[in-house]
Amino acid sequence: MAAINYTDKIPNNVNLATDRTLQRALEHWQPRFLEWWQGMGPTDFQGADVYLRTATSVDADGWATYGAVKMPEYRWGIFLADPVADRKIGFGDSMGQPAWEQVPGEYRSTLRRLIVTQGDTEPASVEQQRLLGHTCPSLYDLRNLFQVNVEEGRHLWAMVYLLHAYFGRDGREEAEELLQRHSGDADKPRILSTFNEPISDWLSFYCFTYFTDRDGKYQLKSFAESAFDPLSRTCRFMLTEEAHHMFVGETGIGRVVKRTLEVMKELGTDDPARIRAAGAVDLPLLQKYLNFWCSSSLDLFGSEISSNSASNFASGMKGRPDESQYEDHVLREIQLKLDTPDGTKDVPMLNALNEVMRESYLRDCEIGLKRWNRLIERAGHAFRLTLPSTRFRRSIGSWVSLPVTPEGKLVSREEYDRRLYEWIPSEEDKAFVRSLMQRVVEPGKMAGWVAPPDRGINNLPVEYEYVKLS
Ligand SMILES: [Fe+2]
Ligand SMILES: [Fe+2]
Image (cartoon, rainbow, N blue to C red):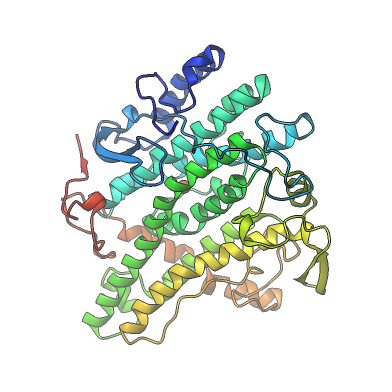
């Protein structure tokens, strides 16, 4: 089961050839996907040879082969993790019953919505990042960008397969719509607002892969628990691809910190103006980017108190990330204390699951912060990078639009407006970051604002020509 069939037009490990109707429907969608890739994917690099990994099996280790591929020839396909024999539902009111091989009628429209919303983010991020290649800080980074892009394209395939295979005509129509909405489009935007923000500089790209792809990881982890077994298996394999995206973010930001510390040492100063004049990102500026992307990604978890999250959990559609680490999997009896602007409230745990997920996400975000701060500490500086409070800059939930500082303190509206650009990038900050974005494509060379990575891809040297531009 684990081996992937590459002789079919659509690579897959789901025996697609045995279901002619499904195969034909997906083969009909395939050229539209390629058209979308050509029109909305990375601009101008379609003829380049890119050193990419492609899935060859779904085993935990050794699933990838590496080689030079032109992106439009990437073998996008349908890869599900192996089934777990006699899998049972692991949470909610139907806990212990057999997992679902088909979609129960009463959950059909909700599950379809959940899959479409997840599916929509995948091509959206490719669209958001389509211009980045032109200002790549190195060939190594350019290759990583394209690896992320082709895999987000594959994640779209993953969701489209579920829609085609399990949701009939509605599912096929949704699959078409996924190619018709576009990031930032005035008439047909992507579903979630974070995915309509263009990502036009690499500092934002590193932050996006660190914070927003990590939200993706948490969504996938909660779907990996789903009672709907095909969704669970799909998401379990997607998670193995997702890990690389967060690696790009964590090491990217780490390399920025490293380079900034070198410049601080050379100049013997921590004066932001002098660091900027030397072409590096001062640490307070990096903090503003972290504040912006972290707070924007926190909104993706939804309101702290949510009846949808309660019913998705109770029904078995969506669990908590790493469900097995908890003791109570039904949650009918317990409450959670929530801090709201009107004081602490006791909320039924089932209704507070978005908040539970957001908190475990933030603990995961802390890991990178610790690494980066260790670099700063070792260089002898007192400055520390931090995550903003979950109340800062919220556009959803009980703290929506309240004037709260990144430390979580409620201040006057006047103070908030006056100080906002101490906390998130101002137009001037963004213009400075844009000015750093100069294309570097000599093998092994790096832009001046980012340190080289510790090692290359797949044991190759950093100097390897990861993208051969045509
Ligand atoms: Fe993805
Ligand atoms: Fe991703």
